[in-house]
Amino acid sequence: MKPEAFIFDLDGVLTDTAEFHFIAWQAIARELGLDFNLEDNEALKGVDRAGSLQRILDKGGLSVSDQVFAQLLDKKNRHYLTLIQDISPDHLFDGVLACFTELKSLGIKIGLASASKNALLVLTGLGIREQFDFIGDAASVAHGKPAPDIFLSVAKGLNIKPELCIGIEDAVAGVSAIKAANMYAVGIGEPGVLTQADLVFASTAQLDIGKVLASVA
Ligand code: BG6
Ligand code: MG
Image 1 (cartoon, helix red, strand yellow):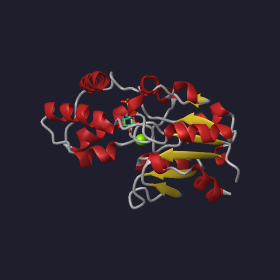
Image 2: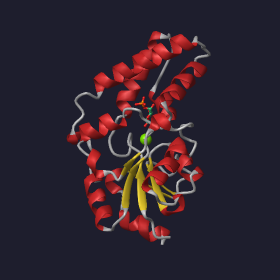
Image 3: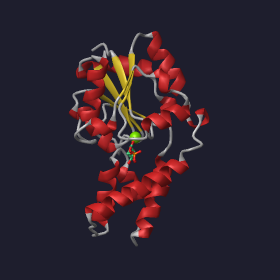
Image 4: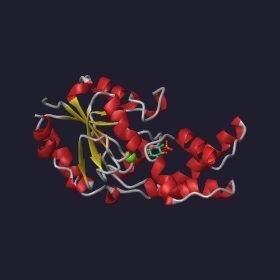
């Protein structure tokens, strides 16, 4: 297969926003009298905002009215926005710009498939918004990861068949979404965790485009 597009996740692949999501969710959990540790946060990676809150409530055996649920989502996001306000190109993971340059030189398109409704804001802060041929809109897809919707919408936006796309993800839910979209999945993290991925690199800095292309050839 000769890939025509690489479709990247944002949080955890291009930059490390997981810590900011963690701080903001932990504040909400504390307010509800619930525990929320790093392991809990790990399970939320790639999961959309409402899905994350639902999991936190389920784990704590709590249920709240729709109105309170919406208020908690809003509060979490306002906190998250204050935490990311100083995000800058310094927060870009090593290797990202080199990857983009290499992909462009090979004529391979670059897409973004993030579950975050704050993706444009983060991309702008990182200074890479203009690098993408198509940026998916998390707010307009029916189902969040692990459903394939966001990856399929980006393939469609790029006008490239899903089977000619390569997805790059750090989260278990994200890798499942890539596979459900019938794409080749590159994981960033641990092979023992990202078991569904076709190929795994320990970090974005180690992402080797040549190796990916060789493994799908
Ligand atoms: C994903 C993150 O990229 O976006 C999740 O991994 C986060 O932790 C999700 O919950 C939704 O983000 P946002 O910015 O829309 O709340
Ligand atoms: Mg991620």
